[in-house]
Image (cartoon, rainbow over all chains, first blue to last red; front, top):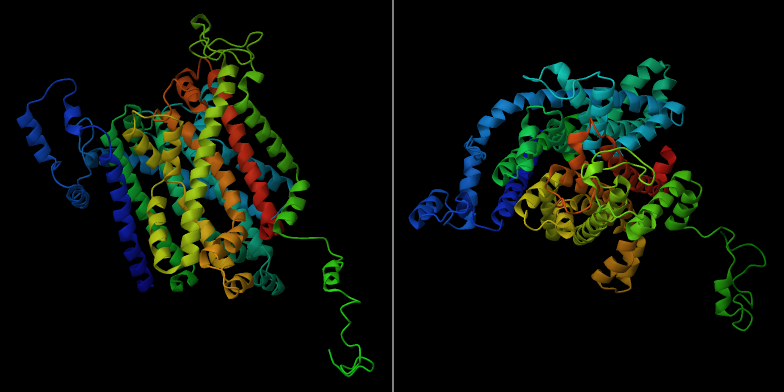
Length: 309
Length: 319
């Protein structure tokens, strides 16, 4: 196991350097002079220009600039937002809200997704299965902002079950509707994964053996079938996190949740390029860490994976 | 089989039929009782009986027709707007009502179709080309080629492609058009296609016919092009259909976020984006473009799903 963890960590280093390099490169390929842009229409003093260029290392080669940026990240300097606030400070303020929303969404999608997937898989071809196959197909097809607007319109405005925007301090009851919206796409994916995995596992020999030993259905289904069917679901959580990041940006924007996603959403809407980039970088780093953790968890759950080179 | 059956001794005078009696060509006319069968014929047989295939195919045909000849479906100019009718409901001749600017909602949807579809097609083409090049070379040549190409793919794979597109579109804010947005989406969407093709090529590479082709002295590149690739392309076709749906969603999401196509473009994402503030007062301006978008995405995903089931015998067993 130690060897596996070590190998996996070693593999993560070039990917981390590569992704940050790519994002950094994209921004520096940006047409126009960022320093000149600071002054708008005014003609700045050339000495001042030179000083600013010196301060932001803009006269140095691209690779060196990237180095300053990377070492800054490791020292907790994630850049400065458009309004002059350090990105790290904004993150500290908004992250708890997003974490609450994300945990709620992941709980909803896991509990309902696995339950529906299990029942569908055990009763393959039944009415329940057919209904949820169609529902999951529709949910996968609907872009997240459409789901958000439909939920806001029918559940919020017409039925008045939920508040359409999140109030001060983001209390948990206000977060339920955005969390359901955020969970909907991954819910569909988890239903389908669990279903096909349950069908596949049910036909394996050890399940037949378990029934043959005289074990009851109540024991075979949770212990033998469900546990072995969950491995693909766990692996998919890493990729799901990517959906969650993009989804959180849109949902938090629409429901006005004061979280990380909303900050990114506002920055995109107001076209504040540098803020967008620093937030995207943070999210990509988070995405890499989550995927690394999922891979390690996968190694714990499925011993075979540790020995594959 | 044994040779001691009486009358079938190898020493018989006419053990081999003389060429005049049975010319070599006769061998070709051996009648095989079974129907001809390969992956594609099997898949077509499976598709032919599935209603979902016909539903999605008809819908896609209809959408493509709308995109190519929008004026066949509406005679109203989508750019002719009457501000007096802002956000008003349906009247005769305008079945879906009016937008905030007083334009006909139905006409805007019809004329927006080609934008969404062309973004989808360009992205898909880009993803297919990049994915096939990277995946095929990595899987077929292995070794250091594989290491370099696969790690490069990992890097692009690690950035969720909508986030990457947001950055690219923010950087290229002066050049927002159909090609740039397609490039922004496609540049980061190809690694999943490459991964799938790579594992498929790795599998096909072990086949006997590849060894036979090697034994015949064919060049490696020719074997890849003529023998390995055609036999490993099936999963790529499935992924490509589904990625077309993903690209249409991505364009709408980017336009919705305001980093997509400029507002002068008629696209579903732009319609939804401008309508969102009027959700309470004029829901029709938001619901109908969303419906058009969702039906289009759904048709491509449905097509991808039935084709996947048809091409994958394992998936067929799971049904």
